[in-house]
Length: 127
Image (tube, rainbow, N blue to C red):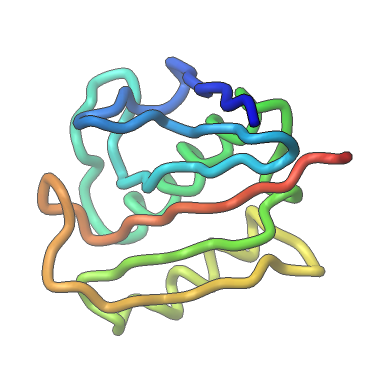
């Protein structure tokens, strides 16, 4: 089992002891992304902008791994306010099409850097 580390400057650099993504065979595990602008490494303002930035960051990492968001089979979304779940659904519909990936949405007390939303994903590339 060989693992390949995925990295791109089109998504925020890791801010801890993790990789942006790790590929093992045909599966890519994308680390959690918050609404950091990759150019400035600062959090974008507001829930709507953060949700878009999260999906843009995931998209950049997926593409760096040789795939796209259409290859995502599992998505986990973490929100500091589950009242924003409808906004996640609305924005997610611009990035994903049917058949949608499996998904979990979890309410959490807080996220790194004071983020309002975070998402991670598992992607499966063609065998």
